[in-house]
Length: 343
Image (cartoon, rainbow, N blue to C red; front, side):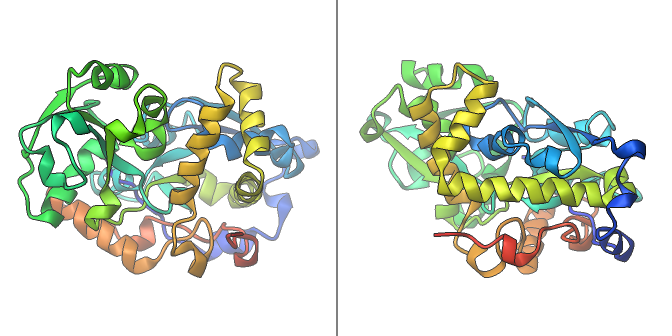
């Protein structure tokens, strides 16, 4: 799992948010923003498509294009390269990325999408896997070569005081993961919990067990909305506008999931509505984790983030410890009153 880095809020960025003229293009043309998803189009990211479908980005003076991604780690490098201005990427990966970079961070987190990382290992009960992580001993677990759930495993092992090599990894691409589990080529696989809905559609839930990393006491922030340093420093009001529109759509997706999935299917008609509604039901649990009730959607608790940085630095032996101030920039978040979770 690669780490995410959060850039510090700056007085200049904060003070510029009240002046739309700072980010409006000459002639009132919308500001173009290329946004990269972490992966393919599914119910997990339906709020972005709801915001686009309902014209919330357009109403904020933005022209947002949304592209599929190739992993929550790749999103970081896409933004750092300048090809994309914003995207959805893994916070722990950003920490690791920033630790390897000198000078001003190239990418920062500006809105915490997954308040808890939905990391899980899904195992087959008929292979002896139970809700105890120790039941994975000697098993064969499928995972992509570089993906956040696999990379986070050492944190679970350390927390539970078990060996990192408790089981054998079987490197498998994302597209084949369900197949190898269903066929029994492996005993289980790593997933974002909500991504496992595709597996649940092929195997009975009673035949599977979901080992959530959070159940092992590993409390990691998951994928966040990221922005390039150029966007944050040169067009902070545009970033704030994007976050307002997206936050509005997240709340509406929670209130009316069917509308959010319908908007997503406009972009990806082959999606199965029932499957995606179930996927979003799981996603929602991680977006609106319990502590969001204290600080609202999109924000982080400093101490929790500090602990995540410490854990990432420790587990991966990083030579540099990124500061929390340089990892998460809350200056462009919508007002707290607009980010209240509605039960």
